[in-house]
Amino acid sequence: MASEDAKFPPQHRDTQPGKQYLMHPQPQTVNPQYKPSNKLQGKVALVTGGDSGIGRAVCYHFSLEGATVAFTYVKGEEDRDAADALALIKQARSCDAKEPIAIPTDLRYEKNCKQAVDEVINQFGRIDVLVNNAAVQFHAESIEDVWRMPTVIIRYFLCIYMVVGGL
Image 1 (cartoon, rainbow, N blue to C red):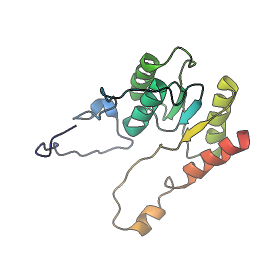
Image 2 (spheres, rainbow, N blue to C red):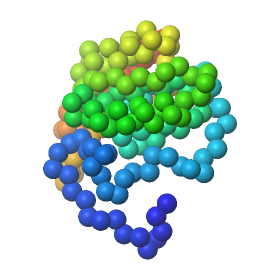
Image 3 (cartoon, rainbow, N blue to C red):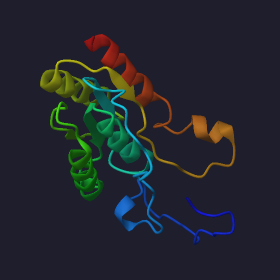
């Protein structure tokens, strides 16, 4: 954790999504003082956008808690982050959890949401936890501008709809 006096260097991204392996300073994925207590033992979790940032931290800590973890990422753009995240999750995996999987997909499209959910259900039999984390961030002058962005809300409802439909 940074002290109150610590200053982060200025940051600017020309492209979205951000690539964690290029970030300086690196986001803190692992909390070395975290003590797992098997709260998710036997559960299956799908985390959208689990390749980097908060999504990666969620995947890692869910794995420590005993969950079988699947996550989505954008193929091509996020391959390196996905590989790094998958290796980290495998390292944290409990002996009872199944091998984690990374699903390359673009969740802006309904068929891709369905395919991701179906893949998890086919591989693990169910989804107990859905973390809708996939997102990109763009500068907007007003809330009206945010609502006009095509990726803001739709993907969240699509994944929820597909998971509930698969239950």
